[in-house]
Image (cartoon, rainbow, N blue to C red):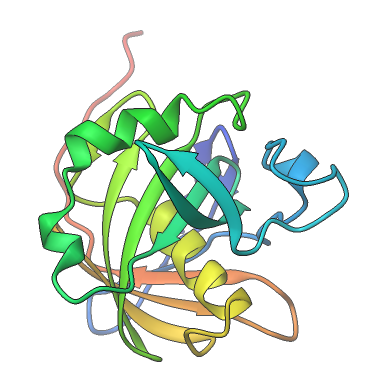
Length: 187
């Protein structure tokens, strides 16, 4: 079995018979002090809180999956495609309400089991995929009663299956994985 050591902890992926890989992404942290954010009191959850960015008020839900995420659900049809991510993404990332900066996911709910998103990653900008972001989106969608506890999350780089297990609170992510590099350590 593989073990992957990350800044958020050790991950042990499970390779399924169909070639997809399932990973236990851990338990989401939902209190403001755990994210961290100053949008609400430290021991409160951040669900549908108003946040002024780019001259308008957005409703945001914040989740930490070992890194901070600010999730925004877009209500209007076509608004995800029309969103100027390069203009608005940095304004969320560097907003004073997120002292360690934040990743931001803009989401369109297609159905209770299908979510589409675009992501602005802190320090990286617009990216094709973000595993922790997909997990944070599902958690936020469940908290806002927009989705079931298992859904397909569509990202520009491909789809991920995300499940938030109600009994253990762990979030599970399933998707494709490719071997892209091999190496050895210098002796």
